[in-house]
Structures are given as structure tokens and as C-alpha cells.
Length: 116
Image (cartoon, rainbow, N blue to C red):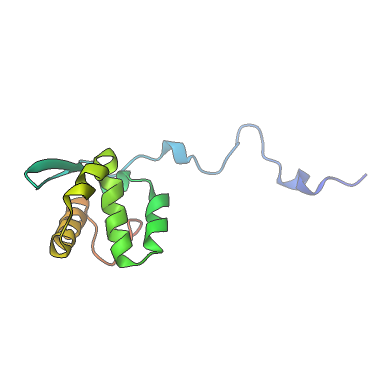
């Protein structure tokens, strides 16, 4: 009797997976970055604490969309109020540069390669 195709690939009960992503912890303090804009205080979550899936989608729209997508994600629930205030281009670039610096991201590098 022939064995099922996946029989050779069956895992032992004590090894249900190869890598436990749930056990991975951040290697840096995920301290939010707090800024002042329009006389108000805004708190941006650390870049390494953001869900990368919406960021990848935003990046498909080009550099400007990637920048705004990152700021949107970092602000979270604060975004609608922040968006209503408006943001000049030169301030957007300064904001993003400062945010990258706070998060330890070297421009041109991905999060996966930063800190190495």
C-alpha cells in the first residue's frame, strides 16, 4: 500500500512548528515619538511597533504615499484630527526624517536591515 504524499512530511507531535513568531520580542525600546504640531501634542508609535502590511500597501503608491502611510499608521486613532490640520510638504519631510531618526532607521534601509 502506498503512503500518502504528505506522510513523509508529517511533523512529530513535540515539534508543531519550525519558528515561533509569537515568541519574538523587540530588540529596542519601542518608545513613542512625541511632537508638537498646530499647538497640539501628537504621539507617534515606534516604527518597529507598526503593522507592516498597510505600510507595504502604501509604499506601492510611491514615496509620498509611503511617507504619509507611515505617519498615518504611527498616529493611529489620532490621524483624522492630524489630517484636518494639514501639513506643508517641507514639514512632512522634516517630520518623516525626525521620525526615522527617532526609530533608528537609516534612510534607504528597511527595518529588517537597520541596526546591523
